[in-house]
Amino acid sequence: MRVVLVGFGGIGIQDHQTDMYLPAFAKHPAFTLVGVADAGGTEKAAKTAGEHGLRHFTSLQEAFDATDVVCVAAPIDVRGTVVADAVRAGKHVLADKPLAATLAEAREIERLAADNDVVVVPAHHIRLGGALRSTRAAVRAGKVGLPWNVQADFLVAGGDPSPIGELANLALYPVDAVCSILGLDVTRVWATGGDTLVTLMLDHPNGVTSTVVCGRTATVHGIAPAGLATHRYRISGSHGVLTVDATRPALRVRTGGTQATAWTGSGTVDALLGVLAAGIRTGRPEIGVADAVRVHRIIEAARRSIDTGAPVDVEGDS
Image (tube, rainbow, N blue to C red):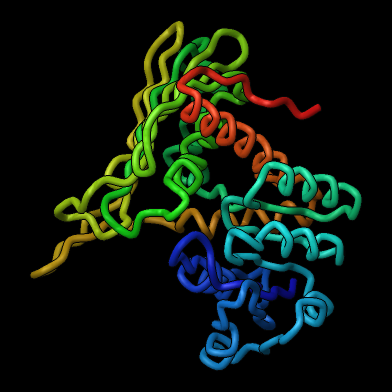
């Protein structure tokens, strides 16, 4: 399947297209990179095209006409529009997270994807890590009995703070992971915190609850900037408790002046491309636009809760 990369921006200084998606697509056997295009005025496409021997498309319509799959990592203020335009053109989409700037945009993309019979996969790739896949399987198999509570911690050390806050930037990942583990939506949110650190207390159906602590800390010795300092889950059920360190399996690499973590297998972005390829074949991706809409509803409710200081019911899909 032919792939065009559209957009080289994100939130703040992010460029996930260059750092994550381009190298993953370049090595995946199901996909062939054919070109790049700018979106949002970042002007990085021409440079990328020259460095990687790809075609530089100067218009999005020209790019859409030349491909089967569009990978969108445009700046957040135009991302939803670019994804929607690609879907209207009948193209499958891999979209950086969050899928769009607003819930209304995400819902419109969901409607368009259904109308045009295309697959839209948002980059909720953290849930695809080996530890979290095993956790989901164990909980769904009843290894802890009936789950009643999940505690999740997702802390990034150092790096550049998100200009729109870490609730919008980072909290998506653990919230999505918790919903995936439980197989449950969220009905109510009580949230507190600021731009860099937030705590979300979530109510799920059937009396199940969860608590998510998420944000960005100061630099931590031995962890690369923007590296995961803590990523763990504690699932309590009627017949036991499961504790998970989602940074594993991995190994620690130490040199004379640096220390880093290296995964022992393929990364979660590689797994995300596998989800995309399988979803295009079957029409039923493991991670789809409905997941992006669900998390967006929860994050928007959390934002309202922080603003009001009170619990907020999560807006339904109707």
